[in-house]
Length: 513
Image: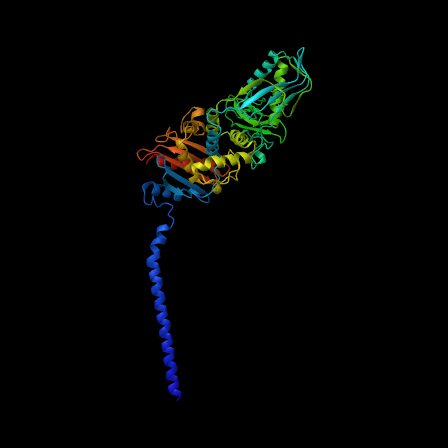
């Protein structure tokens, strides 16, 4: 009986095992059929970053270069290359990765400004009087109203002073009022380090500002240092524009002819005391440094008061900042150069202050608020139709000085392709630095780079530099395969100057196609 039961139990186990085995076979068959049906669809939709360039000569050359470049060890490099005619993305290395663009951000700002303000837009500085004139005495204030003009110079203030003299004013009974209220009172890019406040590229953003020369570094003074005739003597210096608002402490000396120049210019924080220290060799050519002024608006009004005094117009109660009265009478107006011409120093020389002024001006014109927030909102609205995805970018200013800015290289090349159809594009293109071109307002920041064939004159691009960051984006003519649009953003690099040399070599690969 026990033997029979064992046999029956064994048979049941065999039947159960066969059932499990049958189910397993069915499962395997079903999975196999699913793979046959759906795997082609899955593989067809899988992303291929370089699907259109796999195996191409250009891709192989750039991949090899990037993988073999020692400078890129520990760094990040984003590269985006497009066909200039079609906009096709022909090469992409971390092109969708957000990276710090430095001054390549100005490419967005310039395009926005041309689209919003127009090529022929001008900034104005206006002169008003408020009160009656009796026997040469103005019974009220003179008002200098700023309109964001970075091209205002001392000669323009002299012209304003003469216009007051022409209407019979010999004395101002109250004050000179400086009105800088067109923009808000945020004077610096929100992320700019305090140590940059004295630098020309970190000057204050003010609606009432002035430049020392035609580079239009608004809000600065230019100090030119010349060595003395004898070793050990103090150097001589001149300041442009001449004024008593800024004080210079001269501690620099003349060194031997074969010595190394080592001049330092520093401005005490929140003051207008500039110290020159170090040495300059005997017989050396003079050196010029541009230093930002503290309280740039007051600086302009101070200079204007000095010019009035020079032509015999007395001011009873000095000057202050305030708002133009509604009943003030317009006497004179100075207009800046056209925006398309202002873009030359902005883009060629990478002028940060211009970028911030343009950002605030766009906000004022479109949103009624001269602020970074309003300007950035306008940029977003105006560039989105070009296909730029601002949701994936982090933009904090108009100059690129912020280390918080993050931009994808693919979006930069997309912009440079899309704007080619705009009527203002020739002005935009003209504003970009040209490789190897010696003239300052042609070559700009590229005038000492890529001076050899096939790059000289054939690369038109915007450069950018921050500590640990180097960037360049623009257009390049190739030998035979058509023109290309490129963007190279290098982050976390130890040597920015070496990074620029590497950029030039990468662009040479493009030009030689």
